[in-house]
Image 1 (cartoon, rainbow, N blue to C red):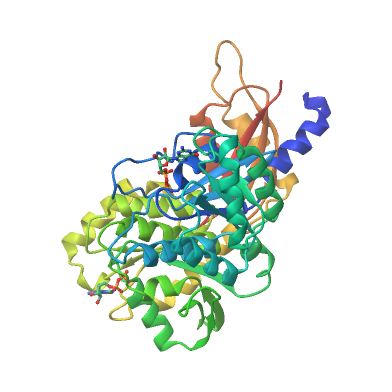
Image 2: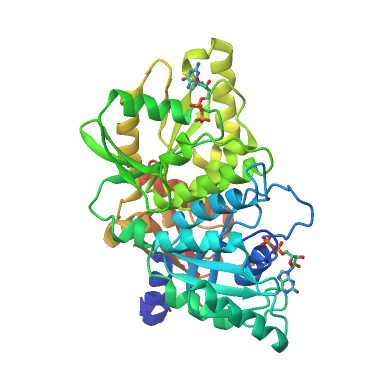
Length: 455
Ligand code: GDP
Ligand code: GDP
């Protein structure tokens, strides 16, 4: 590496940064208007989780990447979920339940000016049952005079209240230090405890695509091994189902079976549920209603799974209802609307008739294999060397940037770091990704490529 002009420490640092693997997940929960969204904005240091003044505004983006003191993690924002027909207690509880389930640690936000309410107490009970690390955020402490308000929150029994002004930033640094202490290095439930256990599948898709029908079909015909009872709810959260001679864990089936019909906030609820399931899973089976046009909502769900770095299988359901014309247009739609997952294995199924159910498992296995593929450095560099000499980067400003060498820094999904002599254009990066896929497969998995340029 040194002879190519890179410092060996830079190279090692770049490989480590790129190969970080899945990030731990932090959920921010609390009643409406305590300042959750404002806090999330602070934490992610962006204006992305826009604080909405209008009630009932749907936001589907619920997870964000954040970094504090050099550590990266994900934040699940539950601030977009308005009080709904369930009534405030039930809706806050349900929202917290989903978020807590997906999280490795929780920031519980209380409005210190208001003090602890009955709803806050209800959330505390959920937090106790879940047993996840909790950081108590006493928000709206905008100045020293508010500190006394914060200290009343010791009574919640969650340890030290951290006085914070999400609005002005006061105290957020100390609170984030506490968060980092609470967060495990790697997501516990996803890649720690469960290693070696059954593979985890998230069955996701917008409402009415047939998730519960599909689940009933596979769980009904095959053997449901056991129902695990979760700590936070009476319903089974994950189900172990034997398919194709292998036991799989379908995560968050409670969310599928529960059939909650909310008016306000229903989309948001669905997004939160999807995000929670995706975080817990290794592979996402994305169900799409083949009888209807592919919608923006379908695309958002696809994006969620891809951005979370999960293996992906596309299952087009309700195939029994398709006529020839619809089949023709569906193919065109898939090309134009689902180009971002052109690499995903696809099955055309019918939860109603059972059509092609047996193709589901091989598709899942293919996607997981792609997700775990590791390309040896020697093979990768032989490939890159040939590629670069046959198809050099276009000359820019009299110079020709070149990929010098590369390595795969991680798997699940595959992550590559390429080292280059100059800026590599987006088009050339895409070309390299395409060729990597042609050469090494990676069917059913997103791949990450980061490029380091020699100083
Ligand atoms: P959420 O419903 O819990 O996500 O709450 P929001 O983040 O939307 O905040 C609700 C209201 O409280 C907004 O008007 C915010 O500007 C305000 N707010 C949030 N944090 C603070 C704070 O630290 N101090 C004060 N004074 N107001 C805040
Ligand atoms: P979910 O909201 O995604 O769980 O969807 P459901 O499983 O509740 O299904 C929504 C509707 O689609 C129900 O009326 C199902 O009977 C119907 N449905 C589900 N799968 C199929 C299928 O393969 N073919 C047909 N024709 N209808 C289906």
